[in-house]
Length: 349
Image (tube, rainbow, N blue to C red):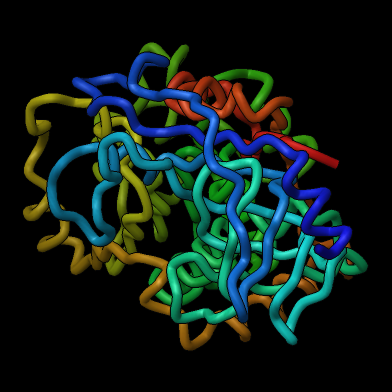
């Protein structure tokens, strides 16, 4: 028996399951932490040890038992999401012990994964020399890709145009603000605390920031921040915030539908203003997207994002919760607006 195999037998595995489907806002009772069998890698697989877990708003939709662009989580099965991990045992020619990898994987301390990108439990290497490995779940991961393609492909901001970003202090929003600035646009961020808005103005250089929680008249506050109207709206939240922004769009405005976090926990369909008349009279475009639609162009995005990071043109913020068992609480915190930038759970060093 190899030394590495004996070592893995001594380790304990744990996993976090979806114990029940939420009714409205999720609670800790919807999750269950259990001990799990230590996986053994088969030929072509690697055994990996989790270092960081990503928690993301889209995961709320997967907790419902209904069709979406990704299948729902199964009850009493592990939650899955973005993971950064270290290879501790390899039976694949493509990986060696000590490699850092990332992939869409179960919430477990240890996982046996394939090195085939066509598989759900697959991984790709992360180069720790480029940036801290946690960025593979943020600025150099799905949030970075989402900001890049959503803003540049659909929003198409031009120099001098006004770009408004809701959820501007989140993992995607902070990057959208900065990419819009790189393209020469005037940027207005919307977030839920004065601390977050100060970060947007002082650190990221947006021209104005609006606190949607404390504004007595949100539309009036946005109108003051956007005296020339809105050319591009990057929508991460939906609901009443977006209702207010859409009253200010200019002719041929582009509205990018990235997320609707304000609606994810509603038990009944949301009822709001009808937007079609505004889109019609303004000849405006509203388009939703899923980042996987751009899979063939991921290399392009990673290359450009990496260059911007290296040049100091992109900053990133991370909110890190320590401890595997605290992953559910970190997830719930997304809906209370507790995070600045990317929300992560640190599991190991």
